[in-house]
Amino acid sequence: DVRVLKNPFYIRELSDKTGLDKEVKEYLLSDSLTTEFLNKTIEYILFVLNFYFNNVKNYLEIGIGCTGGKHRSVFVAEYIYNFIKNKYQNIKVLIEHRDIYKN
Image (tube, rainbow, N blue to C red):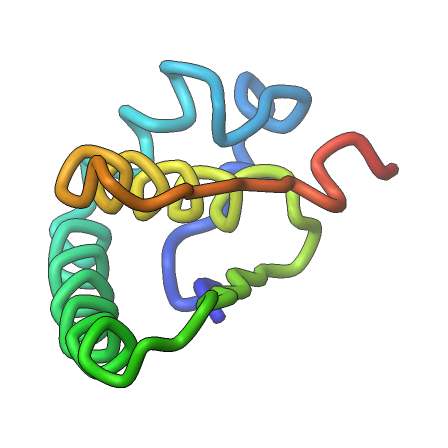
């Protein structure tokens, strides 16, 4: 649940954009809470992944949610996706933004 992060939806210039857009990323990263949130989230995921790798689990699903599914959750999901993909190049990492284009 990433609703603790400031919401770009309420900024007129960002409302129609998504978490894939540079302007939304910059807006979210301008708040120190976002960086702290990302660091703590990655720390937790790495903790969990160690158990998955050691116990030969086949897959791990991570769900990220916010109010509209267009800005914050997309940004955070992309961040996590890229981090895991770069750190563990030997595992298959998939991403899906279920609500990114919903009204």
